[in-house]
Structures are given as C-alpha cells and as structure tokens.
Amino acid sequence: MKDSLISDVKFNCDVSDAKFWGYFSLCGLLMRFRDLYRSERNLPPWAPIDQKEISGWIAEKEARWAELEAMDFRTLMIEGEQYDPFDISGINNALKHTGLIYGAGYGVYMKPNFLLAELQARTEILDYTVYFAERELARDVFVSSGMVQGRCIFLRLEPLQAFLWEKFLESGAKKNLYLDYGFQHYGFSPGQNRDAGFEKDFKEMVRNYSDVVLHHELAEAMEDVPEWPDILTKAGDRDTELLIRALKDLISDTSGHGPLKKIILTKDRGALGLYTGLIDGYRKGMYPEIRQAFQKFVLHEEWQIMEAAREAGYSKFIALREKVLASYKAGRSKESLSREVKALLS
Image (cartoon, rainbow, N blue to C red):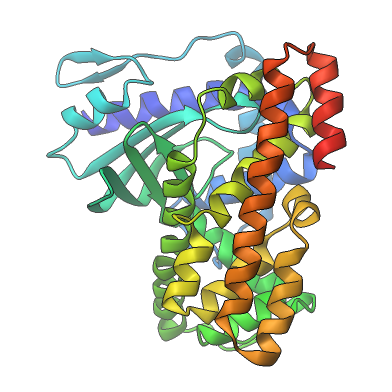
C-alpha cells in the first residue's frame, strides 16, 4: 500500500507542476528543483549534488510535462478504499496507524499542492490539530513550511531546514545584520565547521523556529475572513495576488495570536533576528517599521519597542484589509480591483 500511495501522490505532484511551472521564474524553478531532488533522495540541504545527475533528472521531469499537463489528478487507494486527493480528513483517518501524514491544498497562484510524509509528532492547540511532518516521501516542486487546511495545521520540517540553511549561507555571503543576529543567538557563525554536532544543533534550531511558523499558520486561520479566497481568485494578475497574500501574511504575523507576539513573550532573540531578516518582497516594503524597531531594540534591549511596532503594524494592516474588502464588496471589475489594491498596498 505504501509504495503505491507514494507513486500516486508523486503522480499528482508532477501533474500540478506540469500545469503551473510557467508561473515561476527560471531561477526560482531551478532552486526549487534542487530542493526537490534532495528531498527525493533523502539528502540534507548541505549535501553536495552531482551536476550531471541532476541535469538529467531535470530533463526527464520537463520532458514529461507536455503529456502530464492535460491529465487529471488520480484518486488515492488506501486499503481498498478510494479517496479524492483533496479529502485530507478521510485520507489521514485511513493513515492514522501507519506513521504517515497527508496534506493537500492550494498555494500561490492557486497551484494545487500535495504532500505525503512521515509523521514526527502530533499535538493540539486552540482546537487545531498540528502535524509535524519530517521525512517527505512525495511532494511537488513548490512548497511552504506551513499549511492550514480546515482545523489542521501542517508544519514541514524538511523544507524549513532547507530554507534556513539557504539563509544561513546567504548571511555569510552578504552582510545581513538581522540574520546574523538571529543565527548568532542560536549559536551559529558563518564559516564554522559542519560536523555531526553542527547538524544536530541546526536541526534543533529548525525545530525551535517551527514554532514561529506554527503561530503564523494559527493566526492566519484565526484572522481569516470568508471573502479572502474570492478576492485572491479575482486578483487579476500575479503582482496583485502577491500583494494580497503579503497583506494577509502581515496580519497573521502581527496578530495577538501570531509569531511576533510569541517571540516577544518568550524573549527569543534568535527567532526575532531570523523573523526580521526573512521579511522580503512585498512584505518588506509594506512593513519597514519592523526593521526600524529591531535596530532600536538591538541598542536598548527593550522588548516594548518590538511590541509597539507589532501593535502599530497590526492596526495598519487591518485598516488596509478593510479598504481591500470595501473595494471587493463594491463589485469592482477585476481590472479596477487590481488597480485599487496596487494603489493601496504598493
């Protein structure tokens, strides 16, 4: 059952990638291919890759896309029962004694995402079931470290480790005082020897930082508004969708249920540095106050500085969301809604 399930989930992942690969830049696609290649071979993010081997692997993936992009997703067969690939509850109920966890949903650009992984741990928080996924057995090329599906939150430690490793290398190559501060408070410095102790400590940091991801996903669920999926569908273009998603992320981050509040309450300097350094893209432009507050915090070590920035940010982003909702409820055309969102959030 396990092998056939892995095969079917991988097939659905490949179909999704075939339909949506064109939405992403070539550079971004190649980086994600490297992560997927390592995942399929159970390699840590710091393991070297044979360039000839991965080039052939990528060529095989791309060659299949033409035939896969017109195909439908497969139903999943578990113990003689068929399941729709988006029936998360039914599938996980069927897998509850196998040590496996299954996830499915829609990511950026409404791309279907699928996951089959080994379950590391399961817990309950505020009426949500939280699953910690470790070794990933099947996944598509575009991943997020956290996912909310109904009353379930999935935390994906493997891609989170790969992401933080990439940022650790980046902090050594480019001076980033936020990331440097964060990694140093977790006991890491650029260029240090990578031995068994390093790898163990790095995994412990990943597990610690997964709490930041957890509280982002938890706040996202609790701050959700029913109109948001329709607004994303009506976004009009990629930039507008990314702006809307950035606003939603910042509401979650600055929420009283979110990661910034948890970081401040626990006085986790490492997580604060990493969180601040990892804000990029539209979120960075929409929330410059967080980095300004961090710079003051480093000088004065007063957590109230960060709390004031969090509260002000939350008020600001909630007000922006109300304006976006008002534009949507006014029945604007897709083009008009897109223009208004860009004027508000850019």
